[in-house]
Length: 291
Ligand code: SF4
Image: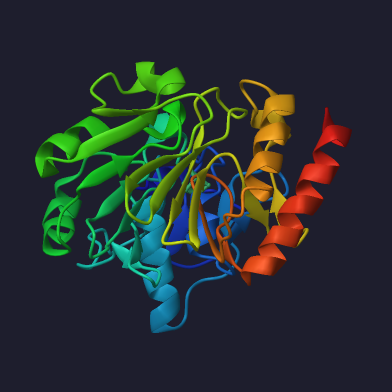
């Protein structure tokens, strides 16, 4: 619960606030754009204005329940309304919120599909999600993008009887995994669900490509709204930038296309497939300059 005694003084006057335990993970800003922004003074999040419409209040509640440090809140209404998460983003993709601090606030997603539901990375464990996930059909396959964003995957997998997929090189983060992605070979989980290894951010990073158009990129690829182009995190590349460059180049040449990008960290985005492809080719061309 956000602490009123730690309310950040730079926030807009009013009942909604962010406390100063914020770790600058960016998640709240992504679910409440236009309401919550990075404070130039110290880089943490603040409300730039108070929500005024029902839609904006809903965004503020999503920020409350996405925050890994529980830093976002309302001065007097301490109990969120029901149904904040899962948040349907279209095409069966639901953001789950409840981001975990030990994955530095990474997003996770439930994908509801006729061929079996997918959970891409995992939120922190909360009873609040169990009923809604069950109502949406549970989880058949839990797909981990890399070692950092595992959170409480083990508990969700056990609760829903899901198979767990991770790359063998990041397996230490999920020793309970039932299925391994190996080397740089693509793997088909079920028809329409492909794991594409992209060593770089970590040695065992994987892109999960769904139904020929949805891409779950973990921390390997994201959208920069400021630059209006795809980006990758040079300063948060733990294994090899050269390998990440080569991996994204291999994906660009693979023939896989996507028109919806869902990230662990960074901003998700929609664009026509050929536009995304051109952005990806451009990103790969720029990456060597950032060695
Ligand atoms: S989600 Fe929480 S910790 Fe992350 S930037 Fe927003 S307020 Fe800060």
